[in-house]
Length: 391
Ligand SMILES: Cc1ncc(COP(=O)(O)O)c(C=O)c1O
Image 1 (tube, rainbow, N blue to C red):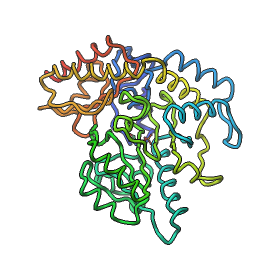
Image 2 (cartoon, helix red, strand yellow):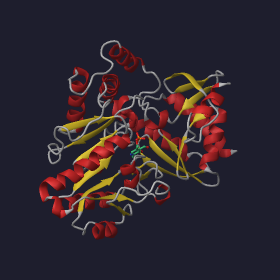
Image 3 (cartoon, protein in one colour):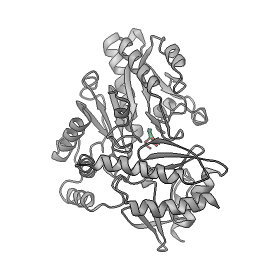
């Protein structure tokens, strides 16, 4: 049996996979078991923020593996303390809870929102509903799937978790109407909807969320799982909108390709969860923390975020030269491409054939390149993409 046959006979078929077995990868280049090379414009769906196997990151991770690979959260580790300090200081938050994924970070945020209102307004107020946006994506666990505002995903697994209300993105009237309900405890949103098609929210809509939430003491939760940790050219996408949510959630690129999720709180929500109310066996695992320390050190190094912004602009300039490209959405290095005549999924498959890894989001081609990608690799990948789009 070859790898794919062995894999398919035992791993559940929950993903539509390409027939490629990845082996040795480095920077923005992936190599399969047959020695074929691929330029990477997907970074493992936005996880390998420093590319494949960055030297400094790999050294930090390997050193941690040989020191303390895991300890129960009943004890302290320096590596987790260092990371918490760096995250809170650089992002402007007070406290963090570490989990292992975006869904887990969002579960934590949902629990915080409900408990915040429970503590302040009492059980009888039944202030437990959370507004999320149509076309959002917040994860695959039962609560985060219920929070996700896509009807197509609300199937098979009934009953879903109660208490999520959807508002149309950028529809201020709809927002006002739904927030008139005194049972709402939080509004949860992505500044740029990722899985929903790389659609950025409009500034007036974001402003109205914050105005109404402040007026009604409703928590703002920004799901920065895909947009956070430098992806958009700032550490957080919410910074582009000049807002500071009460709670933010992070995952994907935070540890450079090792599973980690994080939920950060500001002043309002930092004291909500207390001893015994939440936990995660592997949350804040030292190996993941070592990887995340290397990521945040790089992101906060001199000029790094400016480079991300410049590369994002360079991608957009190159894309504008392709005739098949109808429009380009997103911010920084989170890029959605609307194509004129072709199907995004076909483009993605043809790119794999020709040695380029890209993603899709709804009917768009989506690019989430490693933040460290070189201009040379951007040019090589864009050449393949242009060829595939012009065929
Ligand atoms: C915005 C957003 N939130 C949450 C998730 C879920 O993250 P995970 O797959 O790590 O649970 C994703 C994953 O794509 C996401 O894009």
